Image (cartoon, rainbow, N blue to C red):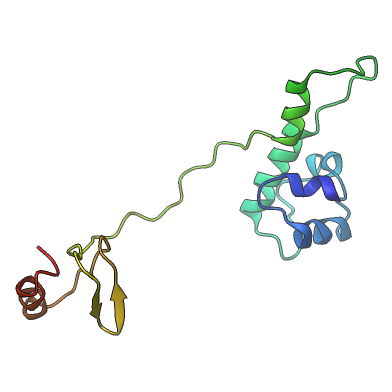
Length: 133
């Protein structure tokens, strides 16, 4: 169960859930069906973990006891599969603060963007105070 935590995204609690579902080591996880995620595990995470376990669970060479450090590193740092970028498109940003500003019951520090929907009246006041440019 401890070796499962070497995979990115699997902590102690998740490793325990996986062990209870019958996946106690990398080999059993690597052999799992990617389409049948256990209860409470997101299908996207499940597929990533199986791919990472497959990459990490390389068969051991019984005749080669003194394997190089490169082989050992590969087992502890599995390559993750290519995953499409699912980040949402960046939202439009408002003006940048030059000083700390409180707007709509929220503080904005220098370098942070104010909301896009800031009123023209508030923009003019902030420019007068030299809080924005």
